[in-house]
Amino acid sequence: MVGTDSGLLAPVWAGTEVSEIVTDEAWVVAMVEVEVALARAQAELGVIPAEAAAAIGEAVAELDVVDLAVKARGGANPVVAFVTAFTACVPGEAAEYVHRGSTSQDILDSAAMLITSRAFALIDRDLVNTAEALARLADRYRDAVMAGRTLTQHAVPVTFGLKAAGWLTLVVDALSRLRAVVLPAQLGGAAGTLASYVEYSGDPGHGPRLSAEFARRLGLVEAVVPWHALRTPYADIGGVCSIITGALGKIALDVQGMSRTEVAEVVEPSAEGRGVSSAMPQKRNPVLATLVMSAARQVPLQATILTQSMIAEDERAPGAWHAEWQPLREILRLTGGAAATAAELAAGLEVFPDRLRENLAITGGTIVSERLNVALAPVLGKAEAKKLLGRLSREPDFAEALRAAPELSSVDVDALLDPAGYLGATDALIERALAYHREVVGH
Image (cartoon, rainbow, N blue to C red; front, top):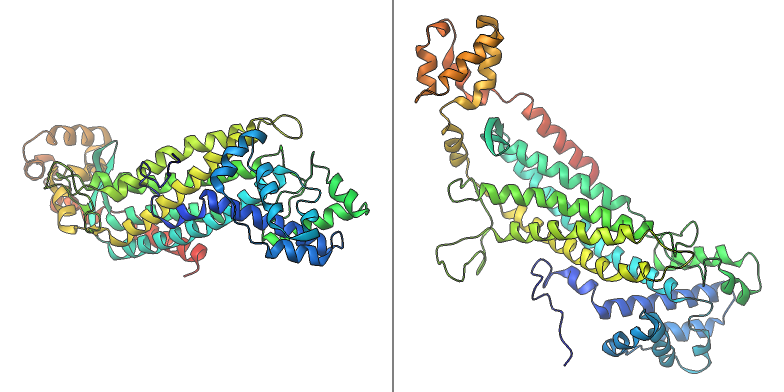
């Protein structure tokens, strides 16, 4: 029995748009597109008849994906069996011109870049949506004072707007890096010399012209040289997806912490059946953040395989190239699923300013100890001020102990205890994050 890979064990991407872009069927379609682009480029340059290229482009390729997968074992890649099956779909003499001069890696690498470009378009869209939602949160809650936490403990006051502005900056950083990734077409022939393509044309200068026309027809970048064993493109994809999921993972981790029952500062958007437990009816689990975290923990490890595959033997590598395909697909699935999930999370995240203030107050004013230390240093001396504050912070009521301290009789303690008065450059930093967002996203 042939099984199904529908994402049963991968809820990060199951049912998302990106899952449809990277299926086996989608890869076969992409390989067909590459073969068609090659034929049309060769026809444009007079190497094969225009009628043959037209017939190749119009061929109805009804291919058995499962059969191709099994036959791929014979050649250690799916292209050998694919070319045979696709050629059989091309009528008449035009079949002679399918795959002319090409090699398996030209087809599969170029198809991989097509698949990646389509997945990246979805990821770009979802990162833009995430960024816009975070920009709204940063602006709306710029004055919502809350406890800033360092090493899990209350540190100094911040605002939720600043926290959202930090998240926003991470997402915009990731978006700008995504847009900088170069996705090149692959065309090199057996060992990256373009010799077979040149030989068929009879023109010594044919190789570069064919490479440029081929890339143009695919909507990909023309490579400087064939990159069969020069695997920067795959490593770049893994790297940027690690950055994207890492950025989104930071947001998800913060949301999880702030969603704890005893913290209750934010809650994820609700939906029918979301966040439920199979055993505990009262639960409303932060499942969107959990899905994003799952992707963030997996993608960097998958990306390591792509980075390690840069260590490739000779002009074509036995094993390094073959190791890339599944990790690439899973990286695109996970990153696309995480980006779509993060967009939904950010757009519907509910913030509770009253709870932010309640949690801010639980340390009885000690959260502004740094401010007090700065303000009291001129009065008591830096060392004495710190010593006094350390002693008073252990009192049951820190604020009252400050007011009662004879050393502070000339100090306006209540003014210093107001957390809203110790926010530094928070507003300016939020404005900088919003301006960065506008610069990169464009609105």
